[in-house]
Amino acid sequence: MDLPKNEPVWERLLDRTGRPRFFITSRPARDVYFLYEAAPGGFSKLGRARTPPELKEKYRVQEALDDV
Image (tube, rainbow, N blue to C red; front, side):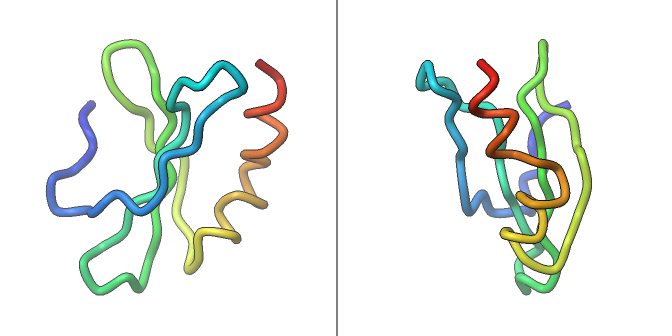
């Protein structure tokens, strides 16, 4: 799966090796944000929330980035 073309990417979160691991996108209205994780062959949609910090907390993004 590719990132949807109609969802602008607002954040690229890198792991400790410098590789992009998570991406935060939104609808054009920025009323809902989506979290994707890089996966073999594309991206996996993890979930959605009203704000990027809410997504990061809900899916423990920082912990996942530190575990590399």
